[in-house]
Length: 318
Image (cartoon, rainbow, N blue to C red; front, side):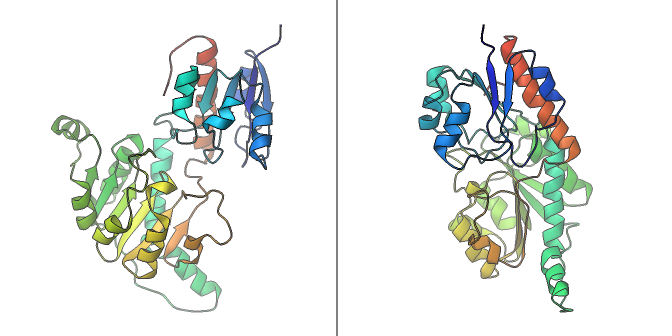
């Protein structure tokens, strides 16, 4: 009898390659790992066409209905993270494809990265480093965070951890969520406010919501114009939540004092990406959870979801 095929179609940058957790999967089927990104959709589909299980280790590898429709044997997708925006969930529901993710698995790691971006932007780290590298002793005023008001967009596991870290360094915190209730606020120990109020009153804003049709473009030109002059913005959620042209305009005009971004609406970044010309900005390549500890949490979790599927156990279904 042919063993089920478990495919990792694009492990680039490397994550699962060499992980001991992959060996646990070989009990359940044949494991095939591709270590480079497919150059075309046709190549992507060719790699996954006979898969029973698909492990999507990178959110920038998209699976629309047209591509999934070519994978007629597919029964399960395991996502190496919390975000499901790379997968056409409607198509999966219609076909009965089991989709599982990793909610909150690396929340402390991602929140730490978000706080690091906030510090780097507040201390003008990239700008001042670049000035020194070009022989210019041209320091600018840094931005103190202690006592400032942080607005957290979202109230999930990463948002909660970011709020805790910010409070630990002496920041005040307020939160916006799509699902505010007095009971939830009391349980989490957070203050919920309307989005416009959060934007208008916060000294820094950190984005921690998943990408849905409701959150796509959540922060556009109108919302960014509501923010305090000189305020800071951090986004470690998804790039498309913030309108890129509007963000570039806000940074170039000085309306915003800086931004720290780990996610972008186009990934990997093209050479002419407009944010690359902005000065008061710190960028990382969508790797907020890519620490040895974070990788271990993700690799073990994504494999455990596949094993649970083969064993008929409910676990992290989307």
